[in-house]
Image 1 (cartoon, rainbow, N blue to C red):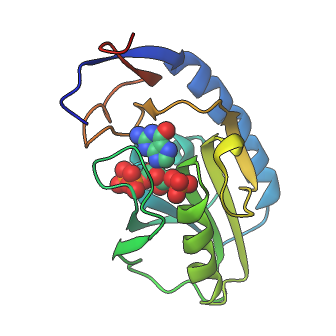
Image 2: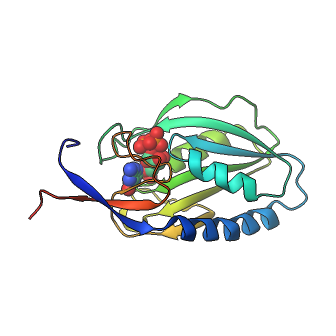
Image 3: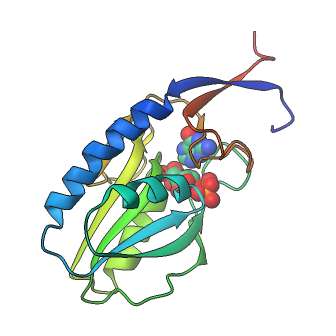
Length: 181
Ligand SMILES: O=P(O)(O)OC[C@H]1O[C@H](OP(=O)(O)OP(=O)(O)O)[C@H](O)[C@@H]1O
Ligand SMILES: Nc1nc2[nH]cnc2c(=O)[nH]1
């Protein structure tokens, strides 16, 4: 699959992402106003760029932690089995938690991780996803905060990979195979 030739067309520019993150940070700041114990949890690997930009816009006392989950491997199809490859370093019982995800597609990953973290009894657990593909959903799940709703396209860039490549693109692009008619 990955040796097929493809190009990447821009879907969301770096400038549009930056503008939306400013708005999202205001939503998060008002939701967690007054907290002295917010833990911002990035889901690796895809969210590493989004969480870096988001936390630098947040004027709140926060800690940052990471959890690595994987369900796609190198393909374009979810295995529907979410593997936890790296757990949080810190305990979240009694803490306010914001889980940061790059994209919600079938919904299996963020739904699974939310249930897992909820079972550890945080004071509050909220989720934010930069991208949402509601037309692909297989489980009943919606993130509390969403950057952009997108159509059913396989996207890359801004942290998101295709077979581990293209995570370093500054924008969100969509993959277009050039050997298709
Ligand atoms: O809603 P879903 O259908 O579950 O898809 C969303 C997940 O798929 C990607 O992760 P992937 O398994 O590719 O791991 P990665 O973040 O390390 O790239 C993406 O980063 C999300 O975590
Ligand atoms: N790269 C990539 N990974 C995904 N995981 C779930 N949806 C997507 C997508 O559109 N692109």
